[in-house]
Length: 68
Image (cartoon, rainbow, N blue to C red; front, top):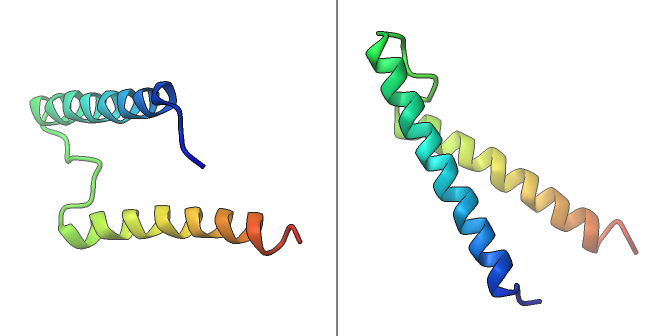
């Protein structure tokens, strides 16, 4: 199933706004000398990606296997 160009554009805008918000918050946290609320290493970031992928996989399994 293909997405419409408008949906793709909206998703890209959402990603860019999230990146901008994170960038601004990172600057604010550093300016007021607070620790960044993010994993300090690649392993932590990959853990977050794994959580996201696990949730997406479960949704896919639930839609295709459990709905039969």
